[in-house]
Image 1 (tube, rainbow, N blue to C red):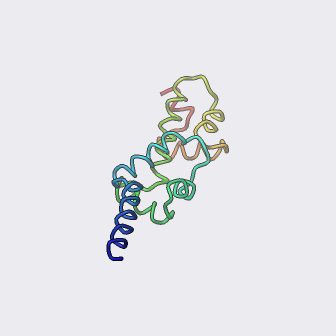
Image 2 (tube, rainbow, N blue to C red):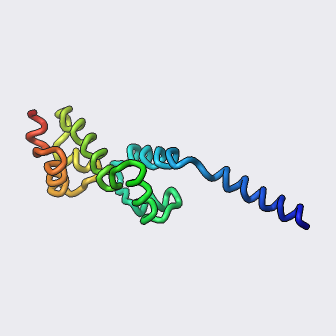
Image 3 (cartoon, helix red, strand yellow):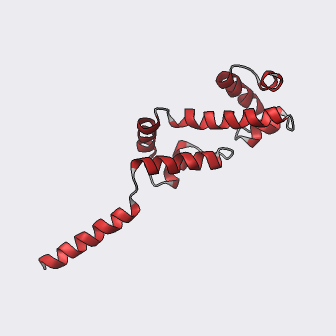
Length: 126
């Protein structure tokens, strides 16, 4: 009976190990997900659900590993991409906002100006 218990415990331990990855790998996967899905309506809660985290835990864990909170990281990714798109001159400000996850153009311009220090139009001619 003791051997059976040890065997079951060892099997459980192995299956947990199979599902576990290092903290750095977990953060790499989350940041990769953000970089791949920045244009969609992603939130801390949706990412936490996708990676089987509690959203409060993911928030603390993300900040502890990246020194940036989740929403600031997501916003930075979106604004860098917005800057690239604006520089091409191929899209309107409204299109760029929508392409990076901000369907409300006024909100996009406000966030862009706060993060980049200028409006999208000013950035375009910079």
